[in-house]
Image 1 (cartoon, one colour):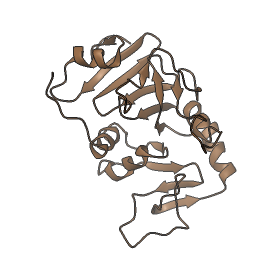
Image 2 (cartoon, one colour):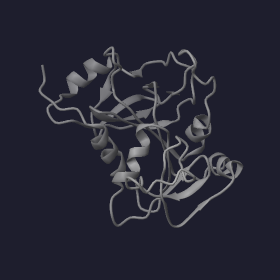
Image 3 (cartoon, rainbow, N blue to C red):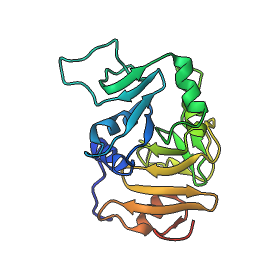
Length: 219
């Protein structure tokens, strides 16, 4: 068995953050993606958008400095950078649907090799039977990235040939950032970007159960 160390949630957030470019307008979805705000590279300007109506969102506030009138879409307290703004929910969705976001980072239950996204479910008791703003984000952003653990608690791959959960969007995911590897999706299937030290390409393919083109292979 290969000897490797999974990325922690913080390391995964840092890995996503390093690919965000200067000047990008980015939406960070509920859950793990919100951690990315704490790891944006210094020296670049990134405008963080929240679907409940914030542009120019900063990192999480220090303990004791939370303002619960200033929260993100996941109801977590946030900060507002100089020049930031908050506005009506409808205006926020107009930004999402109008193609004004460069990157959307979302969580997922499943992603297909060709980029189909499934990140909502009505299967659990008490679950909200709606996709929320994820559908608008998935298809409205210029690039949609997914951030998730590669495997379920049962050890099954969340990257699949075909999603079994309800679809959020079709062929909308460009990159998948996981605790074991970073992968690109294309109409031809998966391509490797990077993987954690000690994990081999062959072992990654075995865990995913799908062919993965090597890094640098044509899309």
